[in-house]
Amino acid sequence: MGRIVAIDFGTKRTGVAITDPLNIVASGLTTVPTQDVLSYLEALFQKEQFLTLVVGKPVQKMGNPSEVEAAILSFIEQFQSRCPKVQVERFDERFTSKLAMRAMIDAGVRKKKRQNKALVDQISATIILQDYLKTRS
Image 1 (cartoon, helix red, strand yellow):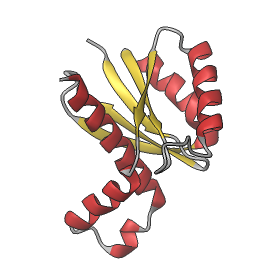
Image 2 (image 1 turned 180 degrees about the vertical axis):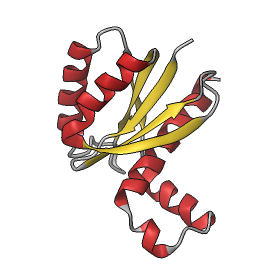
Image 3 (image 1 turned 90 degrees about the vertical axis):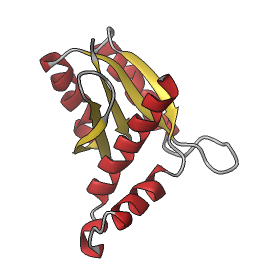
Image 4 (image 1 turned 90 degrees about the horizontal axis):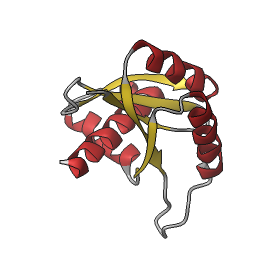
């Protein structure tokens, strides 16, 4: 059984999360500069067998695609040409940044550490992946 990776794609940074081998629990893996995310994922996918890449789908409150959607579609096209055996799925990521911030507050993370945008992106990717896993069960 292959694992699942999810990303919270951003213009500057991209959060990455991964499942355990049984695809039960999502865990934050890292945050990568967006310009390096394609090569990072390609290397990651060569090390281990992954079945699916879940890419967050940012949607505005009114249901319109977010401004970053064009960059995400371009990324997906490039990824699929490099890793054609990996299935790409989209998943609604509305409010994940706010949920990530709330999770950090609830966990008692200090304000200075909560200002670390890379950590927020990584937690957002984890939330996207965990929510994706919930919909599959």
